[in-house]
Image (tube, rainbow, N blue to C red; front, side):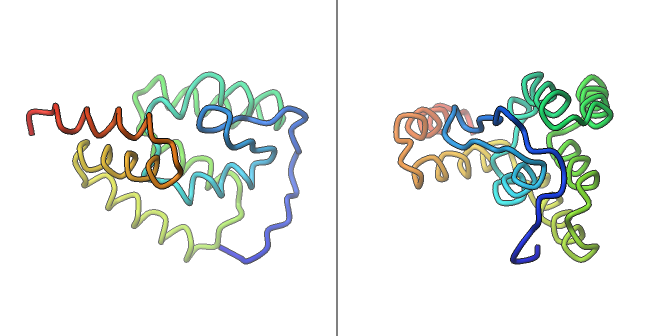
Length: 144
């Protein structure tokens, strides 16, 4: 991705709060940056009605919100939803989109336990100890 991205779309009056109110995003570009940097963190819970509502109402993108809802209703993966947002934003070059697809392909081939460990490690690294501990305990309790 470029070193500097000019936010050209709507700026939300009210931010969408990612990770339990710790990271406010105001624009499509900020949302894309988060999705790109934290692909391993994405799960079905991330793509929720609140996000779709924010995209529709705050970013003024009802078509994208409807497409995401339809994808969710069809049982689409979080990675498909992220790719839909990346494609819609148009901020990534073809080379960058290919790199993102490659990363997503790698993540899709990981087990749920491996993805859970990535999330727990991230939470630990960001001083969210209680949440990290909860995920580590889930990992230890798993039968695998």
